[in-house]
Image (cartoon, rainbow, N blue to C red; front, side):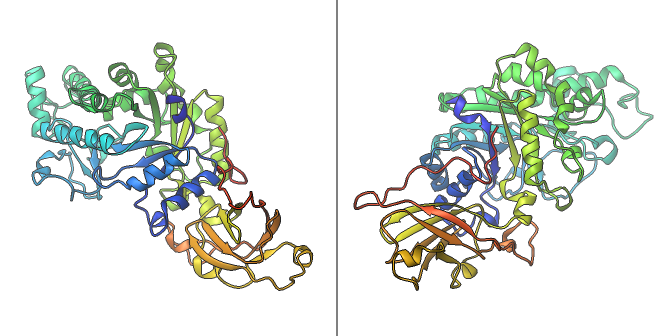
Length: 469
């Protein structure tokens, strides 16, 4: 099972408009045409999963991770009424659309554990992973986005160390963190242990994930950042994130290194930047040499830093060279290639005597696809059939798939020419007014009929857009 979850992979969030109003099969086909066979399904709400999509991906040969967040949520509609009591307290209040929840809140930890158990029991995910299991924030002590310093954290620290937590505001206080290094060291260890303990409770605790689904693979995640020689210790200090102690306690099947925002936000980030992350994995490689490691990047969460296909290919090559067993990227349809590349027909599938399914590299605009002249038999084939005016009709446009119908399609193999189809820029994260149009015709081979029925064969792996690890 584990080997199926390794190799090149991609993150998807089906709540984006790009995935709406299309069939689950068209999503699976598009990801297959891009060369992927492993998907990280971003579960933003544990009770709202597209089970049909999970089933469809698996039926099409994909291995599927359920990726959940560890330190908060973007929506609270699914939480119990007392959820406000679970929130982290930060040095400075922040209203950025993300609700940070405290690992010191027993109610939060218990609720989330049960939600994850129900998730893996309800859906046939091959793996479960908890991303972003850390405290805020990289520059939190200067920005004020630092926590948790709320009542639950204070009570837990008092019980463990018999002291109040460090003071982060008043320099004259004997508890001020810079004035009391011994207390601050205790606080750092306390936070690292808190992150690891709540993850361990969800995964290995009584009636936890592994008890509910002994067959499921588990991945842990930790951050990395290219911020100088003390970055490993700085991340441990500021965000309680320590890959080695996390792995040693939880014993995951895979561990992912997540690119931190100070790096992924950089517009000119080089694709080999992850070579600077080696200090974050050096100890893991020595103490846990058989543990598969994964690396994650972001390819388009902000407009200035969207990554091209060439960038992603170079990133993948670097991951291989550094010995990573898998890589992934957030998020499939956010890459710069979506904004710059025309939709390419990738494969023609014979579905009936007079029907052909075209699988394309990206979502197709239905209105323009139905315009006459977009689909023709290749030069010379009309004459071979003695029917120079063959009319090919578009029956359906479904995401990146197009179903064509023509009573005059030959039973044998033939060539089909496609041109001037265009994409759906209004569905991108950053909508565009101008669509990408396939101006240079692409010719595909339509397979011959097999007996009286057309059989849909397994999709080709990769192709023009294939990215191979």
